[in-house]
Length: 446
Length: 166
Image (cartoon, rainbow over all chains, first blue to last red; front, side):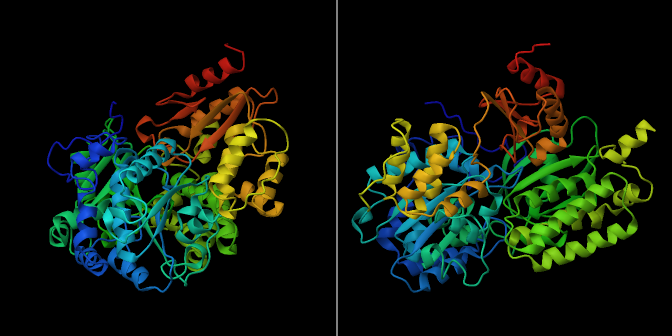
């Protein structure tokens, strides 16, 4: 069959490094033999035959791998917590509920190399002692779902999943579960509720899923890209992996590059590559002779990074320092045709609509913030409204139950930090410098 | 695994698909979302009969079934139109003119996002991100992705569906 999946963007000047995407677009994702021909499942087999679970966790810990879902929690530490937790039944979960607008890395990985994700999960399950697992995937990704289900069937046929895998005492069964269009289900406790067939509403932590997850059992949850990193680490060794990237962020990161940029697509770069290298050397810069204004990372939980910080290296700490976050890997480039008040309003509308309604700060706070941003964009706001908006940012961030609410103010905070003059133009001069907001339309009518 | 299955609301063969999904999951409560997906795929939307049938089969109260069916955005309790148009409002589409495309489609169809025209011809939906950022702004017309659309082009597609080519 034809390989209809995409790999990374062409690497014209050697800025990329393909580890997660090494097979993407090169092998037939629907054929397990194709995966095995490039060494697939050999690592898992070696691990089962010759390593103890503790040795596997030690390798992952030494590699310095951190969670690729956005928060960057050390993977080895999470694995050892689940491994140490008491319980006769343990679960392993793959978070494929990629909900950030402008992020399509996980979808591409699941579509292009589904066996790679399964093999990573098998090794993880062996390391923590889990015998059952789920891949929770957005229902909006039908091709990814089809390929994962097909891959599981093939692996079962080859005796790679099931009872007593490769003649060892290790057993594992995996199932795909569909999301149903709720952004909050990317939050781990909401995701677990959804797998249990309930409304996807988060609950307070602790207890963390590592100790009490699915049906109260110890549960390991990692993101798609995290699992896709496991095989190369064990194949090439922890030292090899730790030699890539920066001091505190190891390995590579896959990003989905889009927006006002010449080349749109997936890229994989070593941690520590600068935003300038990504946008200009790999992405080909800003088209149509316009000027770069900001790059948005981290989705609705992240922030906008202005031109002044374009030499920021991408790693967990540096991105946080400039008011954004790594996030799952969406990177949306904006030029001078975008209004930053409008962008903040867009993300707030997203969080307001996707709020699950369980806690008041998020349910009511995001709606109030959205109302204020609407006032600003229509030129009806005063400086008092701006002060109130800043107060609300602080309150919602500090008192919401889960990450959705806690991070909802980030797009507002980061645009206020770097583009305060645009807010002032809307409030004081009643004008939108980029001619996007309703206030500038009124101006034109006048 | 429970074996005493509940009889479907009618002898429509499509209920068998729903039943097969629930059986595969041993009629366990966690099969609820999978069962609702399967019912919606078979019938196009979830009516009262479907909710009651799934609830009884999985031994769940109707309140729980209704709660789940209304919590998730993908489930719909109303029948959809003959044609479906999904406008992507992901960030890349948004900054590349998605709102103008949506406005043009809303004007052409005479309904707002999330609604179906009174003649049941067209349902207009908005997606968070279709992951087709290279095609921004993207619109899906009856399952076919179309990208880099001007508002006028999008509107004329809707007018064709509505039987008004002008």
